[in-house]
Image (tube, rainbow, N blue to C red; front, side, top):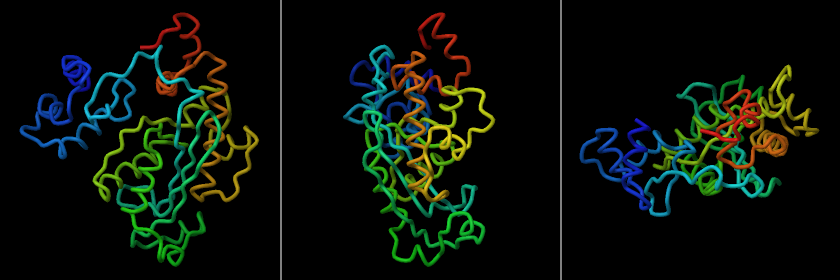
Length: 269
């Protein structure tokens, strides 16, 4: 489906293709409106470095990697969420996020989230978060809307990103009617590429490796700050190995042995 979307986007030229056009022609969604098509197409193309959103909301092909965003000037939002459990039926109860700009930690976002749900005792034991602590906290719509605004225009990053991404993107769609299209980086995967051969790539182990002490483990902002420090360290190391753009980061996070490929071709697919 992505190849068909790429062909359509190429035919549309610099103005790009709208979500409705892609839904009709690629997803065979019929006469769907732009509002209904947007989350469908974002789920298909969002986070894929081959595609980008234009200011008019249309989808276009990403700029060539050689002309991509330099890592040193990129903006990342490193996110961590605490939840009532691991399954899709569980809910976010705390959000922490740290902006990384010019490879330095900047602004932060932190909030408890009152989803009106029971907090299992094992979650309280792990995080220290109790049901009483959530009384008066923002609800999911307010908390997620604040996070979406905070991470606008940045690369979404997290340690074990599939977990945090699944909760954030799903609840953003459910409670805010918005499907984020931020590219996604995983600091766990980046650490495997930047410093291969470690016994453990847990956040605790990697925080120690970069000399960062996590203040309150399993509290969202403290974990997000630890992952942000790790992201900076990984970016610096990968830049030494020849990775220069965000687009390349998105590629190499999933490619073992990328450095040998760089030396032989210096070109990425």
